[in-house]
Image 1 (tube, rainbow, N blue to C red):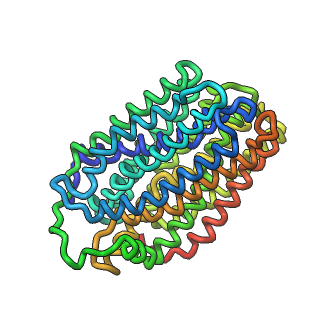
Image 2: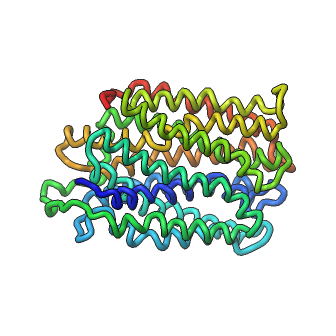
Length: 425
């Protein structure tokens, strides 16, 4: 289908909240409930376990929502109804996550975070998986998809800009205000898709369409390009999430600054991210998405360890050295903001050649089984490396180890993606 400029903007705007909420949860939720082991609202190990359980629940909810979405027949299509019914509750639960009922460690806080973390990840799936599944349906061809994902990445970047000043909002107005602001941005960001995008009509369900979820998933795993893509992006998410989580602790515990200083570290990351969005767009168009993504992963593996050099360089303060390192990390991360969605749309087209069916959502859903489990594993790893219960505060040695662990995960992603066979676009 041919989208108008208005429709392209309306769809792409969802990238703002999709990215912003994920980044805020990744970087600040630990800081909210475990500012330090001594001041924790929930025990460190228990909080890490609850969050990992939430990611795992989320991962297995994704294929269920995707299967339902692929096979739904309604007047509004297969995807839009999920946004209509899920967006409001998603925004509400996000706000509630930041206002635990008790000050200090208490079993009510544990129950609160246990229930709301599960609810958040389920609702995020209900909204985001069908939203992403619209992409292959409303666009066609490698160039058009790269252009649309680049426009989406611009809104992702806007979300990252907002994310960069979240520490200032928290410092000045508190956690509840931050939660309210981001919740409203969820509604504003995803809302236009509901009103502007009309899905193409589909025929009524046929008898031979009545297959089980297990069969639907099994067909997905028969797509070899998908396996290489999803494993590589999962390793990348593990490393990237570690680097996101480290920033507020790096600013406070290594640099001795407050939450507002997070913006000083994220600023260079954002600038290089924005500039290199367009570099990776051009590279993907000229040399193909496969090569552009290989460059993304190699660049990330080289950039992450530069954080370890902070304090050992003969120039600049610790803050300046940290800001330069974050700017270097932001360069290859720009490619990751746009390329995986274009590659996955390519995989969906390949699936249609294999099965004769359009099954967009199940791919976005199934990839979450591994991706979100790996994100949850990164949170658990971060807690074990940096926030041990026997420490009065975060381990500085652990903080310096995190970039190396992230780089190792990027290398594993590269080794996997190197075998991705669809290299023609």
